[in-house]
Amino acid sequence: MKADDPDALKTHPLIFQEGFIAILLLLAISGLTWLFLPFLPGLFLATVLAASTYPLFHKLQERYSLKTQSASLLMTGLVFVLIITPIVYLLSVISVGMSRFVTHLKSQITGLSPAELISLKERLLARLPVPDEVREALVDQFSSNMDQVTEAAKNISLFLFKSIFGNTAAFLSSLMLILFTLFFLYRDGPAIVRQIKIISPLANHLDDFIMQRFAKLATVLTLSTLSVALIQGVSISLVTSFMGLPWFSLGVAVAVTAFVPILGSVLVWGPAAYWLIAHDQWLSGIFLIFWGGVINGFFVDNLLRPILITRFAQIGGEEMENGSGPLAHTLLTVLSTLGGILTFGILGLFFGPLIAAMAITIFEIYEMEYGHRLDYSRT
Image (cartoon, rainbow, N blue to C red; front, side, top):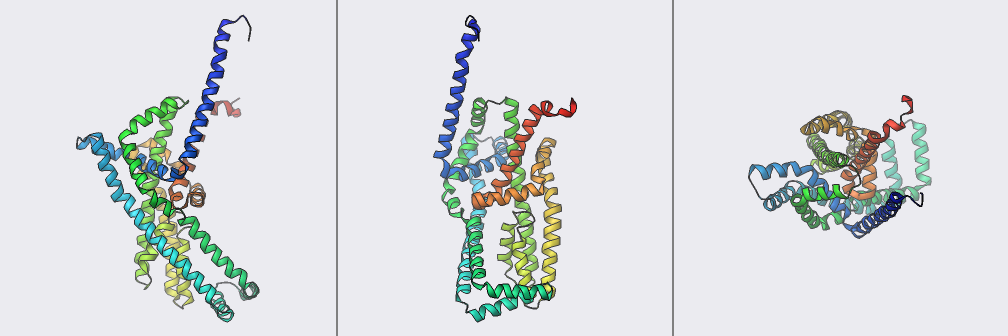
């Protein structure tokens, strides 16, 4: 910078001002994030629900000529009755069931004598479809590491319980916060969007792209995931009802674990089928394996899930269909769902895939803006 350049002298202080304001903005965002950290899961869930149902709110307001305040109150009530109440009931039933299961498992394991443990081990291992040499090796390992196996079984059960349902109490306690936030998101949604676009340093068309993609992904994720879980739960309930098994509990458990593609429902129908085979009900056990692995696992999870994602995506037109691509990627969905469960508990079933899909959106924006500079194959 030349000392006699008046334009440089004018713009030089602005550089420091913009940098200082950017630092203050980051500090403000960090401070608010730290302050609202206990409420972030509830706020995020309210944002997902509002984004996925806002088109219905807008249609409801226009069709019945409602004021914004009345429409927001009515839509919040509908979301509570149709979405939140079933989720709360489902979480309550599963949490109580899992708590009883873990307690019963601990009491059963700790109450068995060494002879009873050996007898239980022999009955379980005798039904494993493995060669005799492998079965004998497993028997020896089990016998020599009895205490470690028992402790590992208890730890695994507690880990699954805490990981999946650890945030259930937090979810229930933040229910009022979710409803309160939903109301204001419906009422002040356009104003909030305008404020975000003003604060954001991105161009308005990029802000619009991110917000539209978030709303569309939230809608597709919510509808497709709930539909697949419901179909798998009802399917297993119908099959197990004819086998004399607790069809309601198994159906609810499959519906919950079906949120995790491929891996989830196996945790339910797999042990149930093994129990049937171990009790000499070979036909029922093999049929349950076929139904859970082929019908639910292959057709519903691998074939019907992408079809539902595409169908729900077409509600918003071709742009929405293209935006549903990250959710249709099975590996990404599985890993992000498992990571979401470990991080957020039960709410991670939705948060994980949505966060991963939005990360893909940021990558797409980066490619759109700078891809022509980074593609050296064109040079």
